[in-house]
Amino acid sequence: MEYIVSARKYRPGTFSSVEGQDNITATLKNAIKNKQLAHAYLFCGPRGVGKTTCARIFAKTINCQNISADFEACNECPSCKSFNENRSFNIHELDAASNNSVDDIRLLIDKVRIPPQMGKYSVYIIDEVHMLSPAAFNAFLKTLEEPPHHAIFILATTEKHKILPTILSRCQTFDFNRITVEVAVDYLKFVAGKEGITFEEEALNVIATKADGAMRDALSIFDQIVAFSGKNITYQQVIDNLNVLDYDYYFRLTEAFLKEDTTAALLIFNEILNHGFDGSHFLNGLSSHLRDLMMCRDAQTVNLLEVGASIRQRYMEQAKLCDHEFLYEALKIATSCDLNYRVARNKRLHVEFAIISLSRIFTEKKKLLS
Image (tube, rainbow, N blue to C red; front, side, top):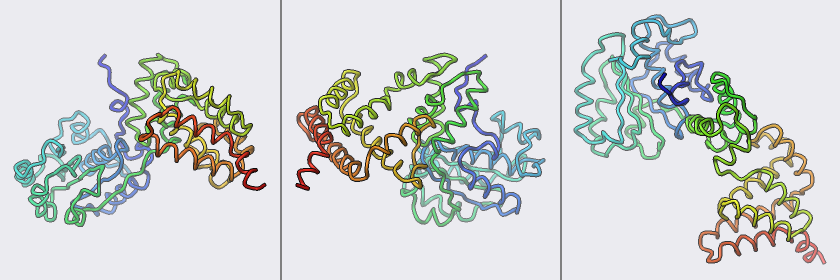
C-alpha cells in the first residue's frame, strides 16, 4: 500500500474536523445556512493552519447535493465523491506564486465565464495571492468585484499586508489563528492512536512546540520522528532527533544562578556546547525559560505556558524560588546578550560573561543596597 504522509492522510474533510479555527468554521457554516454566500473571501494567517483546507471544505459543502442538518457535506453525493477523488470540475486551484502574470489572470477570467457542469458554484481558490504582480491584481479587480453569479473566489495568503487595499475591500476577510500547543498535542494523540503508535506526552509536546503554531508542520515532524523511532515515541528520541535542548539544562542553570554557583553554570554551558548547540540557540532557550518562570509567578498568567503537565509542575516549583526582581534582571541580561550575540567577536566569552552576570545578581543587588 502506498505511504501517505500524515498531513495529507489526516487532512480534515469536514468543518467539524478542522482544529483550532472554530470561529471561522462556525461563520462559514452560518453563511451556508442563511444562504448569504459572498462572491469573494480572503483567508489570512500563518502557514499550516488550515486556510486552503477550509477553502476546499467550503467549496465542497456549497456544492453538496445532500447537505446534512448541521450543514456539513454528505461525502456521498456525486459532487462530494468527485471532490474527494480530486476530479471535480467545480473547484479550481491556482498557485499565484507560479501563475502571477496578467496573462495568467486573463486565462482565469475567461474560465470564470463558464458555468459549472455539476452543482451550483464554481469555486476558484487562489493560494499565495500576495504573489500576484500589481498589473495582475489590477486586471483581476473588475472580475473580483462583479463575477458571474456561479463564481466564488477564495484567496489565501500568509502575508495580508501585501494585498492591495482595492482587493481587500472586495473580500470578506477571515484571520486564521495559530494552532496552540494544546490543540496540536491533542490532534497528534488522535493520529498516533489511528496509526497504533505509543508515545510519551512530553514528546508530543516538544513536537507541537517545535511546529510553532502550524498543524501541518507538527504532522510533518511527527512523521519524521516515527521514521526515526518506530512505533514508540519517547521524549529523549524527540529532543535527539530535532536537536532540541532538554528542559533539564535550563532548570539546572537557574538553580546555579539562584545559588550563585558560577562554576556549575559555566560547566553546564560547556556541556551544552559539547552536545553541538551554539550560543544563539542556548540564549533563545534561556530567555524562553526565564519568561516561563515569570509567567508562573502569577496565577492569571500561568496558562500562557505552552508545556506539558509534568514540566508545568516543575516550572511552578522553581518559580516559587525566584522573585520578580531576580527574574526581571535575569531576563534583561539574557535578552541583552542575545541582541548583541551576532556582533560579538568572541561569542563564547560573550555568553560566558552573561552567565557570570546571571550568577551574580544577588551579589550586585547587595552592593547597591550597602
